[in-house]
Length: 145
Image 1: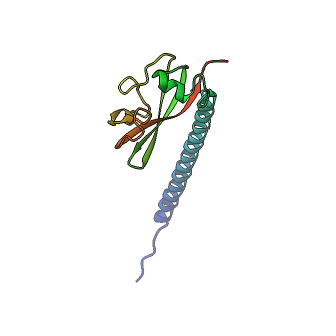
Image 2: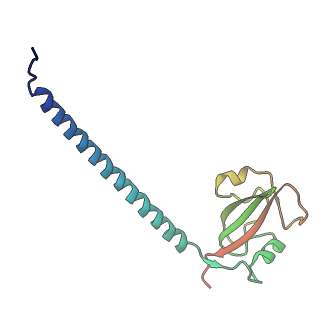
């Protein structure tokens, strides 16, 4: 004789599946919101960086790279972009310097922080330098002309 099942199991399953689907929908909406927030933050960060970029004076004969290293100091207030070269591996480092800051090892604090940990020599001091070299690539002036 086969026993007849009541419908209690069906009712509990219906409630559990409904809760599960509701949980999945809430989870997807939260993840979507976080993704949107991330994209907005990245876009705003790019706009902020672009607004602080300044005027490129890299090749300027009065305040450019050659003149700055010949006087061994920052000639304008701005962003100084360096390239760290360790046997072919290149890392971009930058520093915000004030006018008159000395351009020598130990006096410059780089971003990202890891750039400060390397034992490097400036490439302009000795063009045949071996090992880890630091080369000034760009200068962006914050001063209005």
